[in-house]
Image (cartoon, rainbow, N blue to C red; front, side):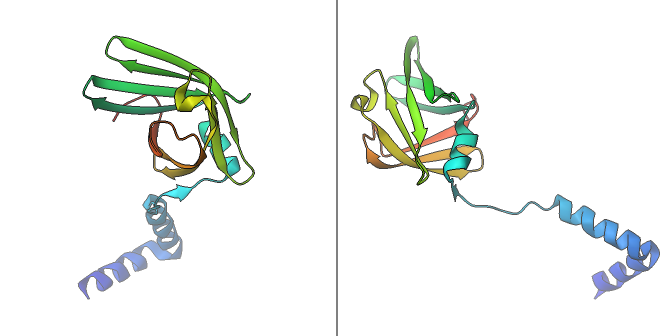
Length: 150
């Protein structure tokens, strides 16, 4: 009850315009919590085109980082850094009308065969879930937008 009476006094002092302004200010500060979202075809194209996608990890051989870039013309490039070792790759990518991301590497990754994935966005992460074709080393890949490792 104390809070309500306090809010009532504030409203009386501010007037209708002040209360409306205060309500808009509070609403603009609130950010809705959104969970993971499956991206559709236009969203996939918009999200990956021109942006770096990065995966980082450590295995028995030490720290490694994969960074891939998707060009507007449907080509892609990737670099894997693992200690002093560097591996470069290139390939092609496309998005199907059904909203699947498909890629084919020219260096033997995923046996050089096309693999298609459903893309899920969760904040600054993109999760690629294997649907068909060649998966590569895993059936699920999680990338961060940008070049930084968490």
